[in-house]
Image 1 (cartoon, rainbow, N blue to C red):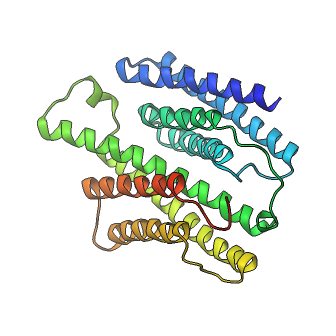
Image 2 (cartoon, one colour):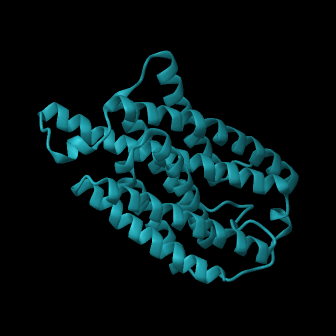
Length: 266
């Protein structure tokens, strides 16, 4: 059943990706409705797949890269659906949905064997920490996608190129507002995730902070987004500077997520 839901999810996300990309070429209420409905159906199938797998394993599937990539994809789509419906930014799907689809396909290419859950991971603090971290990363992914769109739209305005793509992208003000909302959601979630991770670390190895690579880079991520939030609130960092820093922050998130092994997790 889990595999069936997974295959259905990939198919629906694939169709939604095509529909969202088509929205960049042609403005059509019917096409937009198809894109959003396909994505919503894919998200439902993805959620059912994750729930079924969690029920079978008796824990949230976040203990290896295969499971984590799939869950990351799920949280990205969930965050995107929220912001799309709140701000009516269909074109954002052309930048976000393909990324989530690639993560899901990448997870399916990995074949990591199910294993006995280690005592270190049998802690509610771990699940709380991991869930909040993924939700914060999803918010930062949306902010990065908006940042890319902002830079494209700003380029068009600077060059006075008001073509079809320019007309389809949201206004700079709308994109800046979405980026700020992503930051105000994602940064507190990341902060609580780091605190809960420290508590989990203390219970697992007897120290709140062990300065391994993943903890260190998590702190780097926190500092980047703390600087961005501080800059926005105190000295008015907006526009191009905020967009670039959001993209840099997301690159560091991906580097930490894909390139770092945690000494007491996986």
